[in-house]
Length: 81
Image 1 (cartoon, rainbow, N blue to C red):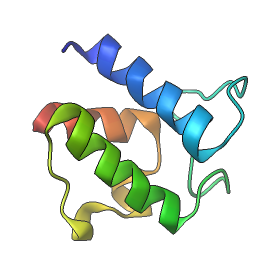
Image 2: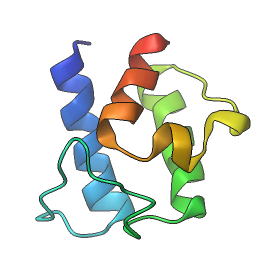
Image 3: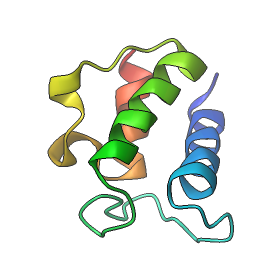
Image 4: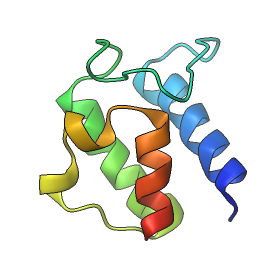
């Protein structure tokens, strides 16, 4: 899967399942957690989605605002494998 496909898959999941507003215009650098769009439970759900969708395990200590707050950060983490 290329970076563009990963980005759009994540964006779609986040706006539909976590923000629950499919029309929300989520930008690549927007603070998803720090901006109040998603809470810590949503972050845990995102971690499970990443593991299932991309076969990439993200350990709990990495599921933080500092590391997973923006779409750019999340895509970068998935690409690291």
